[in-house]
Length: 68
Image 1 (tube, rainbow, N blue to C red):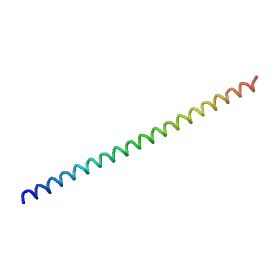
Image 2 (image 1 turned 120 degrees about the horizontal axis):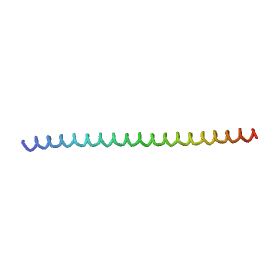
Image 3 (image 1 turned 90 degrees about the vertical axis):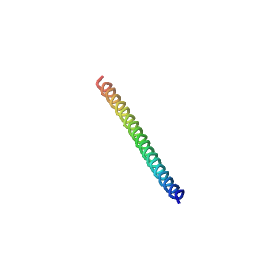
Image 4 (image 1 turned 45 degrees about the vertical axis):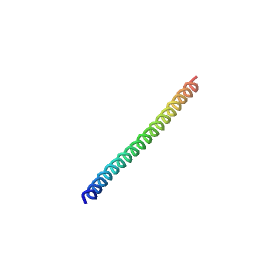
């Protein structure tokens, strides 16, 4: 009887560890996705900023050319 109780006790404790590890792994995967999404957003913003700077520079050159 002692062995059966110990077996159930160990099985219960092992199950808790697995659940905790699974929860931690899931949380880490979600954080990785959030970081990747943030990087993509930052890259898109950088591209848009560079494009706006090019357009502004082109407009300045066009204005200077028209003034001559």
